[in-house]
Image (cartoon, rainbow, N blue to C red; front, side, top):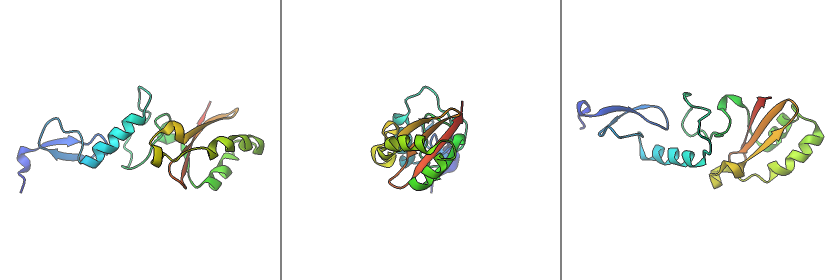
Length: 143
């Protein structure tokens, strides 16, 4: 039995939950969260975190370029195309499909540059991110 009076209360960098640590330098509640956090850090190419200060459920694959608040869709490819048609013409979508079809699932390559495509319209900046074989995310931001 561990005596909790000798342990230090810390907050996990990945899931933001409180945990008891033996050392003051502990940063993660478990080894899995350490690995996931370090994989996420390697995919971030910007000096800021657009989701900083927000508590997101563990295991969410986020786009390091756009806040999760701008997520307007998550689902399969056919539904994604229907959602994109709400913001663009069929001709525009036809040209964008070429890039979307080439995306590699983030779950495979762990590189958001290979897993996302930017879409520009007169009114919106959008980014499509392929999370897995069957799942896509769509982020939308007004100009």
